[in-house]
Length: 430
Image (cartoon, rainbow, N blue to C red; front, side, top):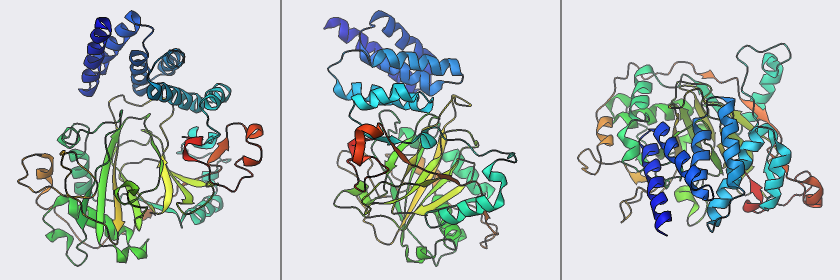
């Protein structure tokens, strides 16, 4: 018992170092723990996750796979942790195309369906398409645009430079915004968001809050593409700052995360803030609505690009595919700013325990619990309120199928190619 308490203290030290961004020292702590306590699951798991997250070479990917392969064989009373280890190892195997090994683990854990190879082993659009590439065929690309339009659209160069700079500065990885919300990727922190009433009849330049100015600017950008936004009265926003290998499970956007019933926004949006086109995986928007009784067959990829603005039907299933392969820079993050536009939504008070929740009022300037909000008060210079012509994103990718059987023979008449019934959530690996 005393020995376990000792290594747990070292484990917490490694976690603190990770949170501070000192991943090299954290790795040393985890490596020493694994060497001293090879039978313990948690240190091995922490080491595997850290190596995978920071991997910049294929050798480091192989190192992460080695640690995961050992970890899945270790005994532990922590069933939740064992399942998490197995799932992350399975994901890495799928990304690496090692389907036979992945299938063994998927069947062991009771999964009958999984995100397909075209999803988890996505290919990025080619910058200089070859003659054989779909991207080099205008007719084929136009067909994809036509298929995608009812579900998702995107534009380039969404914000003017001063607005983009403001967002990148105040939602950067070093911003106090993250620490003051106890934001965490692993384990994931609770969902929180802020709500603003839309002031559609007010000039953007007269709004005394920079963030609200930007939200209104994006609202008026989206309005011609989604005329139903004329019924929107509120904008709910949240944001993420995640490493390359991190994704976001498939989900439906809903008021207060679906408590007291599912209510979807008019549209949801994603603004990519990171100055990179290779950091993190694509946003995946499917054709599946919550009321559908079968899994979606197809969907659409929109890849990260600085100042790209993605808009999609607020009713459809979507998520972020985990970044595959190596990160271009260990310290960079996939920064995104999301806005959902609503006709009606409840504004909620801060929880009694002080933890931020969904659709809260934006903090007042004088709120002493925080400092992050103060940088958003005051206005940005708006050089003109008429928008230039938008540049529509041409690189929306069509992906089909979204799901595949873990074992089509065992699934039999319940194969994704046959069944018309929506399977249980816990039977689907993602």
